[in-house]
Image (cartoon, rainbow, N blue to C red; front, top):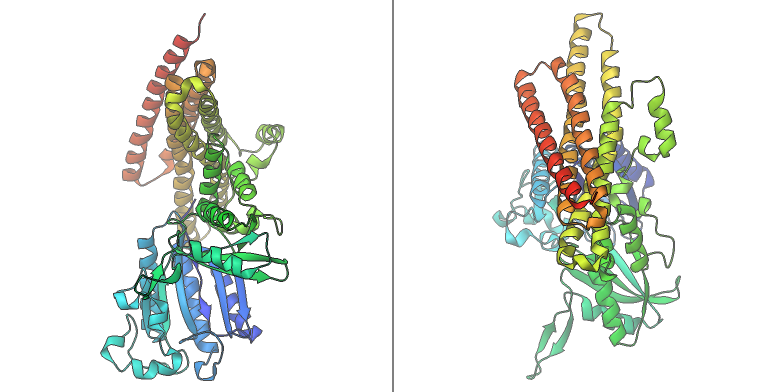
Length: 551
């Protein structure tokens, strides 16, 4: 999966739908981003927009949205219930997949510099991106709101991080930063009493509740969960009380930990959590972590397919109690277009074989090599999962659980590479069919072909890497897995070796057409080394397997 970052700008307009649509359209028109949600509020006169994409595209979309907001929103005329100090009041970046907080901080700084330099709007950095401790909190930066901004900017301590220290009358100031993904989760209770719900909320929320010490002084008694805000309320629509939680850092308090802690605290107060409700979206990893937790709670191997881990997480946390929970709608990466399998791998087995057998060049050997690798990883994972269930192998249970989890990841990536190989080949054909009449056309075609050829080489190169990983999994289960499945470990090794060698042939056939000789030399050497390693490892596995199988 590519690097994926979420951006959640808040605009100081929630009533004029034309302005909201104009700003939203500016975001949608940036290639590489997906607009997930537009949530206007008339009373607050504020709109929260959520979009997701690759880092550079997300920065560009945020910039054009801030620019458009500065052109359409006049803060001199703004009124609303929500605190604010700028046309684009706040714009956080949120790491979602394969991207670190540090990288998102850099995105915030890039955007802040552009907004300050090109739009001449004062910019303050907050949360993880803050340059000063007294600017970490959005509330602290926004004190006095728009009305106090002109005087604040005259004071040295309020010099912005980017942009001029002068008052922008129409756009105000913008706060840009980086924060963790916020998960909004409500726990449903078998009571209508919001006071009882609030008592449980105080038990778990980080802030806890106020109490008096022996001297009668008010002190804070922290709740049991970190990075969690919570309150109890009654929802007329559902005819029940809920505990509404905001998990401000699910890596500190995972969603399943929050659910189980609320269940325990509610039980102690004579209440039952009947289910839960997710408000908004949730990261894929949070659901996979929950699925792993509940599998281990059931003393099952956590190395199950992603679909099963997600299904079990939904069922165990009762996420479908109020309305059906659709992972494709609620998991942020799925909403952004991430798929576990492409069109070819969604075919039936016979459908794929039929597609493979007809007179078109793709899918071809590259896709078949990736498929062979995914089969190898699947077989090795099966042996690990069977070993976990067998009490005779209790000594290696934990190792087999981790191997099964790793095997699912290797299997899933190779599964996607089946389609990616065919897509890369089709892009190469498209590049080769570009016009080449004029000198400019010839140059453009040549550059496109070179780029597409490298891409078409990198896919089977990755197939080699992942299939070699599958072969290592097969080696481990051959040595430590249950002997009754020795033949399965052997077949896994054979399939992995075939995948590595098949992918190597696809690397080898493409490399002569690439002009970058340093790139060619590097990838040729590394590919040859992987091929040699696969041959050695497969031989070791088969020796072990034949040693475990009686004649």
